[in-house]
Amino acid sequence: MFAKETQARGDKLELVNKILSFGIKRQYYWLIVTCCIIAIAVIEGQIILAGTVMYHKYGTWKPLVPYITTSAIAQSGCIGLFIICRFIHKLKHMLDTITTNSNRLPIQDILFENTIRKQAINMKR
Image (tube, rainbow, N blue to C red; front, top):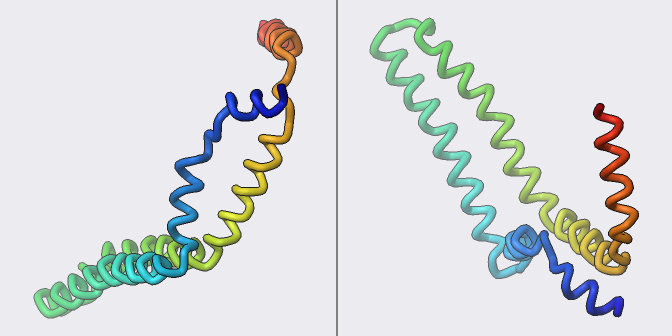
């Protein structure tokens, strides 16, 4: 009965698991790194290029304030891409552990869930 319950429950994190496993395979790891480098180059490149063009056009740094602000905001996104690339295998391992442990747990009693739901509704009133 326990095996049927875990099979019927299904894996709700299957899509996330497939995406993470795509990044862990050695033959595809270069693809993720290349995409991150291209994304960073596009984000930072247009900011640097626009800043240079505006400086030559106006001859002052004042119009560059929005681009400097955008660059500062984009830095956190670029660092986030590097962190994801660095720790993607740990995220995959953590997700596998959560999935394995949750599949081992029995489904909670429906009567228990209904009782808790009624108590929660009564507490709102």
